[in-house]
Every structure is written in C-alpha cells, then in structure tokens.
Image 1 (cartoon, rainbow, N blue to C red):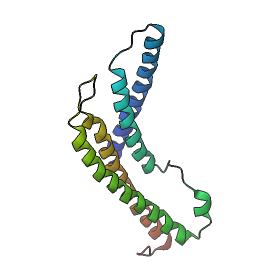
Image 2 (cartoon, one colour; image 1 turned 135 degrees about the vertical axis):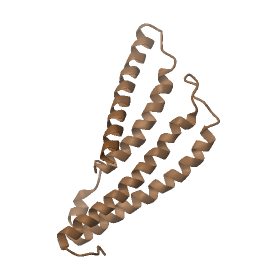
Image 3 (cartoon, helix red, strand yellow; image 1 turned 180 degrees about the vertical axis):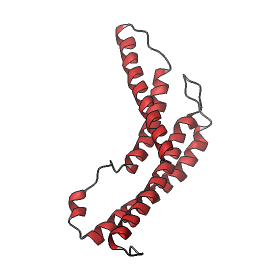
Image 4 (cartoon, rainbow, N blue to C red; image 1 turned 90 degrees about the vertical axis):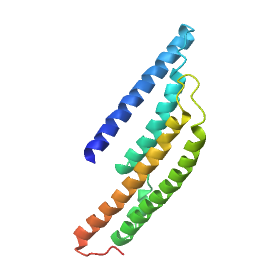
Amino acid sequence: MKLLIKIIEKLISILFISMCMLVFLQVVLRYFFNRPIFWIEDYSLSVFTWVSFVGAALALRKSRHARITVLIEKFPKAVRTKVEIGGQILVAVISCMIFIQSLKYNNLAKTFTLAAMKIPKSFVSSAITFGSVMMFVFSIEAIVDIIRKKNRETGSDTIF
C-alpha cells in the first residue's frame, strides 16, 4: 500500500507541475505571440480535477486538512478519541455519498468529449470517483489506527 501511495503522490506532483508550466506557457503564447495552444485548456481542466480530488485524499491520509484542534484539545483524552473516530466516520459516509453521485455523473459524462483533446469527459469526472474511494479507504485506515493507538495506550480491547 505504501508503494502505491508513493507512486500516486509522485504522479500527482508531476501532473501538477506540468499543468502549471503549460498554463504559464499558454499565457505567454496567447498574450505575447497571439498563438495559443488549443489543447492546454482541456489538459489543465483534466489535470486540475485529478490533482484536486486525489490530492484531497492524500491530504486526508496525512491529516493535512484544516481542523479545529483548539476545541478538540480541551476534551479529555477518551472523549477526544471518540470525536476523532466520529469525524473519520463522517468522512467515510460523505465519501460514500460522493462516490454514488460520481457514478451517476460519470454515466452522463461519458456521452460528452473534451473539445480539443477528444477524450470522454468521464475520464475527467472519474477523478471524483477515484478520489472518493481513496478518501473512504484512508478514513477507515485512520479509524483503525486510532483504535490501535488507544488500545496500546490503555491495554484494553474496546474503545467505547
């Protein structure tokens, strides 16, 4: 799993850098030479969608999302653990809801293509599906980690 995550991280980084460079190139070509490259807009839209949803999942795995820790830190440790698990359960449920809606959207998007690149829009929208699956898996992984950590600290078998 760790190798797969590293590969996905590198791929997302490469895609993001390429998108930034191509958008900069597009601006220069359009405004200074009046010669834009027609497919860069489609590429940027596609890559931005993939980077956003997969990046959000990777940020979830590394606990890099914004959290209100001031309130959580005021709770006793046992309550804090339950709040963290509840938050991860909420993320898992929302990820499932996004996944279901993304399947419906993918079904609609497969009938359309990106104008310049001539690839199905479902390729772009599948980033939402992939990202939501990753978020679900990572939230379950976080719940398991929280429970294991709690059990190691207390030596008990139950969390609730």
